[in-house]
Length: 254
Image (cartoon, rainbow, N blue to C red; front, side, top):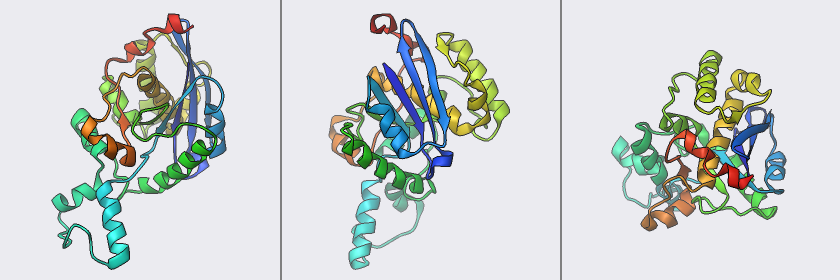
């Protein structure tokens, strides 16, 4: 099995891709690159037994889409008068999956509708179209081989201290050492320096690990009554179980 992790940015210079090969009781990082184009991502998953995890929202909140559409056409929001307070805005700001993430890790993820993350999500929407055109199954609710992942959230659920790791290379070095101590079966090869130097590269590696949890089905899927919503808004795959559980079954796979 191969898992591909992508830390997507609005442009190629901030985008990183990691590939992990899982076999024979171990996992090996075989590729870690920055400056990734959409075509690179598509090519990475169109051959072999590949699963793709992208750190980017795959959709927008239903309420936000309805609000903008109604305002655009008639100048009147579908939900009635605009109140402007936080409670009124929240359904427009956060997807259903974002509420679940907050329940799991104790903090809100960035909002795809009100933060700069929305610019990246526009690129993500284009990437989904390119994947579909290449014959890759595209499903936003984690029902196929494509997952929306959250590297920082996965690390916290695995018990790591993520304080400042996105902005501090020293913190990334400490975190990588802690991860390798917990996972001696994970061979990072010659890519450790790049992962420490570039936060995007580090998150791509974690995205590839989190994608393994998705491939094994070790995550909580959307509740049946929310499945239709997740197919529109997207669903964040947060790992269930410890980091060590990612190697279960590797001998039989090899």
